[in-house]
Image (cartoon, rainbow, N blue to C red; front, top):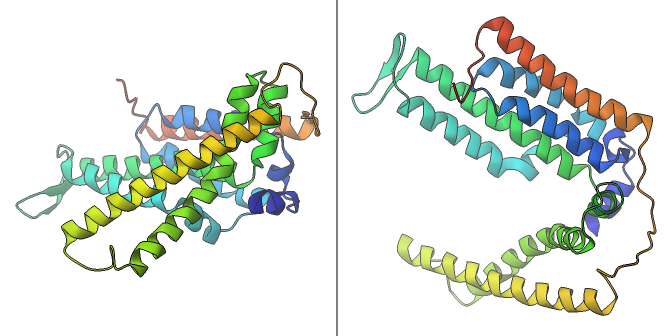
Length: 264
């Protein structure tokens, strides 16, 4: 609910665009990035995506708060690729256990940048899209089954609650002296126990939500809509913007000679 109120008060352009148009733009960008591992196309896509921050009403601080796991995963993946990839070109660093060459560094950099360029549009999409608006668009425009749409809406609404539930369970366990001390193995066991507790809470909450939605007639054959999902000229520009970023990334990599098909 907190996210919905924030989004409805946000007048940024991407916040007012139809969710399906934003989804189409994201697919256009990620489809090109998934075909090649090179730093030129990924860098070009990142520059275009950072230009969209103002249109989404976001800041770099919000990006870090909402996407730090993906950012760290991309950095770790790039580092792992750099030290594990086969050496090619001049050797830049050799520790005896692992080495970094020009070719492996370029491959690792491309992997890291591509991970960031793929993750950033998803973060932008989720940050400037109200789950209810997305559900309306999926049901009215995409014609998806009501039960699937409502299940997706419920899941998106519960993500924030699960994060708060995890913190509550953690504080309750630490108050009883569980998980706040001990060896790494004991801490791991405490974390697994906390995860099981979260799973139990999620199942209970989902069961109550399913019963409530069924009692209120969700999933019936006939439905009415409080808000009509519509497309506007702005949505066309959003889709074209995503296609433009994808085309620019492809053209830049081909022109630089770094285009490297994954399946080649």
